[in-house]
Length: 106
Image (cartoon, rainbow, N blue to C red):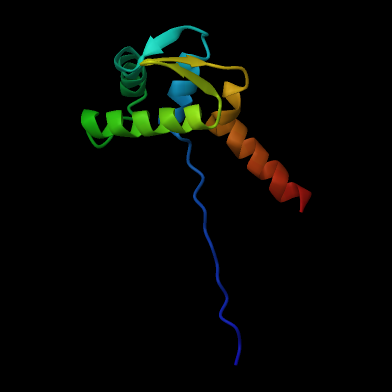
């Protein structure tokens, strides 16, 4: 009996929400979540990358922001957030470059 082949297909699409969070927080300024989300939402609307409605996007942005806090790339003081050194590592371009470098190293 032959073993079944498992094929995986990973679609690497840019994460626009994380990219905009990184862009806004890289300025070094401190933002409360509502102000931060307002900036991110406006930039995503300009790129026509808003889907699922504003409330769903707010939830996704909050989840991604907490992920960045957990990874130690964003500092949270009460309800204010500030980007730390190395935050650019979370952008889609950087993640894609690391994935390609790992694939080429095999």
